[in-house]
Image (cartoon, rainbow, N blue to C red):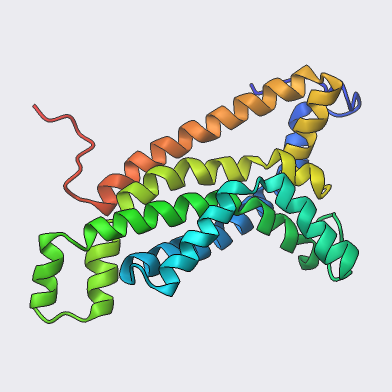
Length: 237
């Protein structure tokens, strides 16, 4: 099972062994990206919804526009030019020390920050207009309790919808970022496999990526009922 044979680019290594040894790098990059994106994207989305048309809202919108118009590979090269070539603060590539993690994480976070910020702001803004929020405020509950217990929890459904598949895509590997920063993860090996027509590696990466995405959608559906008890996963007669 899951025996994809030997890699055509690395004849002495099986595809399964490559995944077993190299996936840890993609997983580390994905988890760092997800953590940073959740803090920045969800944080800016909440600030934009709580203080609409304020400097926080405009800043969050500006960040999301930047993430939209600048491709990750362009931003990665720009980071290398500024922080490695001009300033000499960070190494151009590799994955050995925390200093190597900074630029790949920033470059890989553009799309997640954009998606999370826009969906968080929109869902939070809609939830704050609901009747149950006005009732909670009328009861004298604190602003923080109303925000995180009544507003944020009920705004989680759209965030989970986009966040689940997004997280799955991150842990599989980033093709462009890993190649630019020479991170020996699955994304780097996949790009190499395309260039050398390493069909076993290409098929294995595609199959595992599809499997991880499918599991992410399943877990997302299961989380719906935990976030909102009104959602039932059992077919009603």
